[in-house]
Length: 353
Image (cartoon, rainbow, N blue to C red; front, side, top):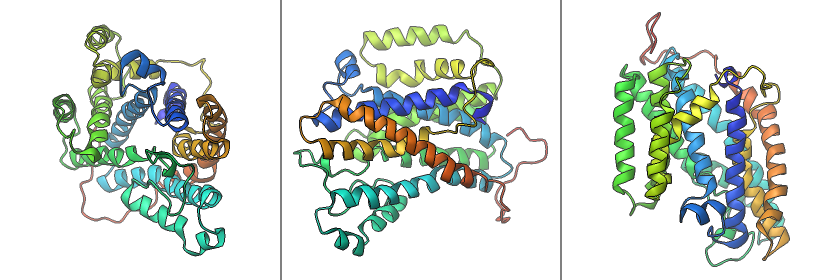
């Protein structure tokens, strides 16, 4: 779907880069206070979090357009599984085996014999928040960050939750803008109310999910047609209010989603397509944190953020390229595999939903 609009590929690479950039400060210093956006906008406003929200907006937009064309809920779910799980499992397994073996605190033969990396990969697929490989420590620090194999994966389960909501709307034949608007407003109200602040496992989802449904709402309102420019004005007004009240992160779905998608869907025939190069952003996102941890472990305490960021970004781009060409694009070729008829809802011929 995104090959129609080549800007999406560029934006997603920038979003993945922003996540790796922000993590370099946390991994180098143990805190995020030196990150540029935090200095500018206050605590929590790390550039990488905006990168995550950009991912969610784009995902909400493209996934909803794809779901609207899906012949069945089962086919839609199959497409989502193929997009997320093969690359995720290989990342978990490879980082656990290779990087884990470099930093295990037990003899390496014992590490492999106990299958620590295999258990980490399997647990990660099931639980979706795989923080540590048993016996692996990159460096000692009071906050325990040095034990984390992959701190980026917290978003995966919330992405899957959003997919499930879209599937439910699709099954109920409600994948249209009024129903999506209700979901978006409910999600944003949960965010504004602060509900769930005492439930750490939900905080990230309450922050990220409204951005997904902002993208989904725009998709259902315009159904893939060219987005008009006039909504940019109210978005600009909301941005100014958010800056004045220091609520930029909270208001991002309201002011950021539409301009992002308006720019990404412009008719940019002169912009070279990255279709042959591949969609490396997901792989960059998956491998960025483990590579940064590896760099911090090798370089030691006191390493400046940029010495972690620059080599990790280059390696993450290479891993993203390999992930796409060796795993992801081959998995996606299975999208049209025969599906069993389980009696799930099927779109009638000519349906636009």
